[in-house]
Length: 266
Image 1: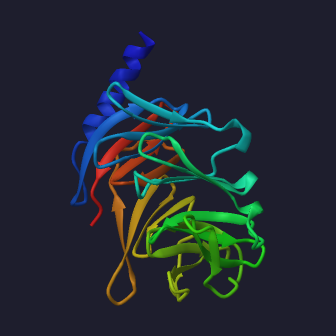
Image 2: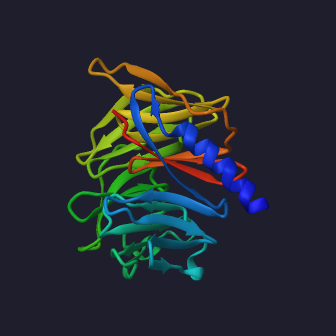
C-alpha cells in the first residue's frame, strides 16, 4: 500500500509538471530513489548515478559500474565526454579516467607529479587536457594526461573558489566574495559580475546559472551587453532539498525521492 501511495504522489507531481517553464520546454521523467545521486542522461539515454560511492551507468538491461574503495569519496564527476569520463577524488589528490563502459583507462595521482600539485578543482578541457586549480599556488593550470605535462596558465586568484564548473574551453567559478569569473585556455580571466547570494547556486556555463531562494529556482542568462536576465522556473509547489542540472535534465531532490525533468534552456 505504501509503495502504491508513493506512486500516486509521484504520478500526480509529474503530471502537473508535464508542461513548460515560462516557455522553456520541459518533459517529466522517472523518479529515482533518494539513496541514488542522479547525475545525468547522455545523448543515448544512458543514466549516470552514484549509489553508496559507486559510479554507475545504466539503460534498460545494460549496467556498468566503477568503484574504488581505496580513494575515498567521489568529489566530482565530469560527463562532458562520455568516452572520457573524469572522476575526481579530492581527498587522495587523484583523478580516474573511464571509457564508455566504465573501464579504468588511466589513474592520475597529482601527488606523484614533478610539479607540486594539490588539486581542489578538476574538469576536462580540450586537446587531451584537464583543468586544474592548484591550491598550493592558487593558480589555474592545464594538465596533459597523455604527456603527463602540467602548465600554470593564470595569475594567482584572489579569494577562495566557492563554486565552479568547466567546459572544454573555460574554467568558470564564483569566489568567496560572490564575484564570478571565467578563465580561457590561454589564461585570460574575465569578471562575470556579482553572482546572487542564494540557498543553492549551480554554474552551468559562463553565460548561464541556476539558483534557488526560498524554494524557487531561477535561471540567469547573460545578455550581449553582459547584464544578467532572470527567469523563474514555475515548478509545482513541492518542497525540495536541492537541485542539480546536467545535460538538459533538472533533478529535484525531495524527501520522497529525486524527480527528473528534461528541460531545454535557451
